[in-house]
Length: 113
Image (cartoon, rainbow, N blue to C red; front, side):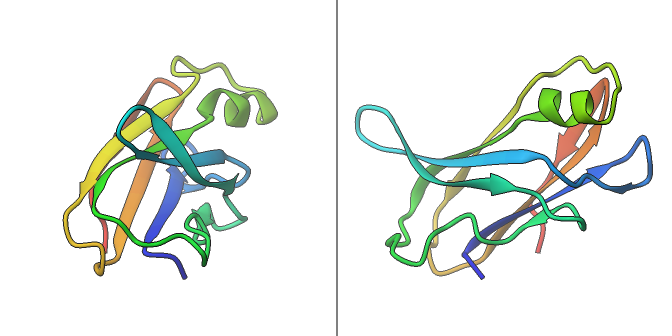
């Protein structure tokens, strides 16, 4: 499992949000560098964000969730087409779990375990 993971829960339905496309990026000197991308599984989880050949680095990361695509697939209107979450990794040896609690017209996040 990678050192950065995520989990998306659809709070309006009370269940995991399967099929959410996610991109993980690292803030380099000049621009964002893509680290990994994929889609949440049936449990709303995406555990392979960081490829095995990525050297763990401290610094600023961004997770971007394609929430508009998810709600389109589930035939529901939504307000936020994407949700970007920017966070800092201070100790690159620690696990960083970044959950997203999602509904069509709001979201929240926190540092999980």
